[in-house]
Length: 342
Image 1 (cartoon, rainbow, N blue to C red):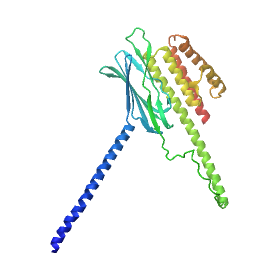
Image 2 (image 1 turned 90 degrees about the horizontal axis):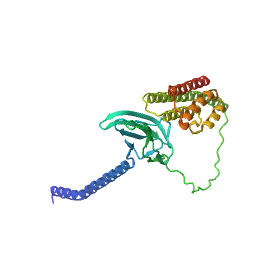
Image 3 (image 1 turned 135 degrees about the vertical axis):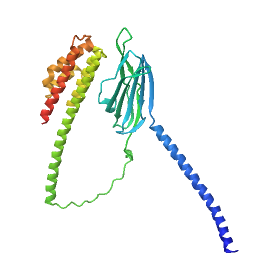
């Protein structure tokens, strides 16, 4: 057999051996692609959005979340869409910092947009949770007024609650039922005592203390400004709703007192929204920052309680006066806070 024939025979055997190897490699690559596609599909199902539709009276309400699961502190977008026919007015609840167990980071509104079948209003909440586990976004009440009816009273449409799974970023947590063996004594040699280390430690502690004081001052100032800006913006929004005759007296006084109580909670770190009027007045009297405003706050809240619970009908410019009192309290208490911080 000459050399040429030997080369041709070697090439044939090489191809016979290589062909199954190539086929197996291609098969494995296809299997890997299939598994990757399945995993991707499963991940997309896990983070899929949810959407619910309900019709209550003249209101068609859509509740939508952009994901069913999220990590701790990961943003979740909740959107409420209220579609109504002409002659029906809707309003969303006053803005707060909490929605159930979720923190509200931002709220965006698109109100009273003309559509083919009437009007559409949209509110979008940007939420996050710091607690892992199964959480529920509670139902949100959207009030509406049907001016086509003779009763001319506001009613409430409720959105659907939504379940969201919050995952923890921590992995490999220790099982508390499994105990480790006690280790032997580990000898640690004491470091050499040098005076310059002590001096450096004192200097570092002083610098950290000064930085902590400065950070506390600026954080407190920013918190006070943020609380007052939020309250004044909410009062401006409420004043516009009142001018447009969108609210009943009960709804107006409920919202204006909620704004004042939530401002006090943000500004003075007290649970004002969850206190009765009697408990609230007692707290104000005992708080040295709030006590100077006891008399105007008592007059303001007692009038609101009479409207909300005793059927008192506001006269003339009573509602405008209530907003003015609330605004004066927010501005005065914020100015006092900044002077004390300085």
